[in-house]
Image (cartoon, rainbow, N blue to C red; front, side):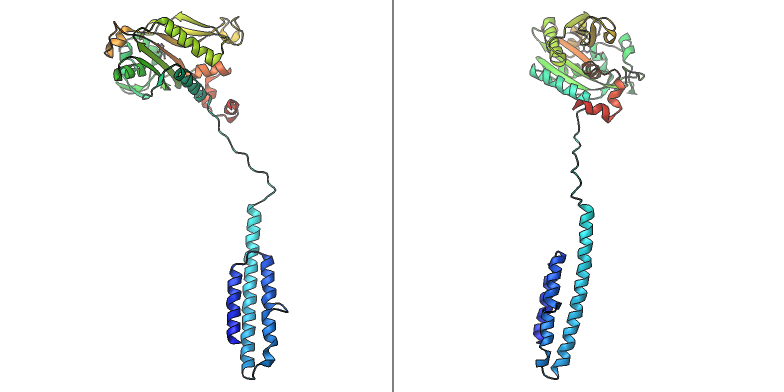
Length: 337
Ligand code: DAH
């Protein structure tokens, strides 16, 4: 009988380990120490034992019963704790949480769309440094040290020869230095100028630059490519016009306007009653720029253009203050889903 009791306790210890809820616990309690349980049964057999054995086994059975009771109590407490923990953590009645879906920043949207449009026309993307040499930002673009065109583009200087680029145009020079013609590239990225902040200026902004150089490139290629871009970005109904404009690295140079989308070119407050909105600078690459990178300016011609991504976004989405792009107001950004 002694062995049977030890075996019983071992079985109990095993079973209690795998008990996961109070129903199972109740079952085990009944099985072992209930009125018709194992211990009771064994106690009932005590009178059959010899006089010497009876007190010994009786004592043993009582001890085991007590120890089983204690273990059951502890297990009950443990299960209770687990239950309240689970209930605290899992409130099945709370509705699921919405995923917070991010959106592309409107400037990123414009850059992406622009890249896609020009990739579709056979241009290639190139990336360039924001910390630039004076040579690429100015000199190589036909803007020597004393040139008045520098006045409009004061930069943040790291040293007299190193600065934060004021335009993406240096990528024209860098690209041509690195590869022979034909060239068809687009380069987008951040630019910096020492401008005071107002509704149309921030010291950091984004530009989109384009360059095409080949044997027979003419002004009509420039007009065709830019007109196609404007139609894809703003809509086919918009008109595009080219006005003479001056940039030291193109000749002839042009300013490009699109007809105002609000008044359809009739003239309104938004377009300063002109019917037109200026969107970029462009022109035929200056022969001197071609010569400086070692291209044969007698044989090759090209066109270039550059525009501000913020300006394009403001015109496309009807945004009146450039500062909105950088304030990170979720209510503003969420509108570009
Ligand atoms: N980089 C000029 C600016 O920031 C814009 C520009 C004008 C770029 C004419 C060009 C261009 O490539 O041909 O004002």
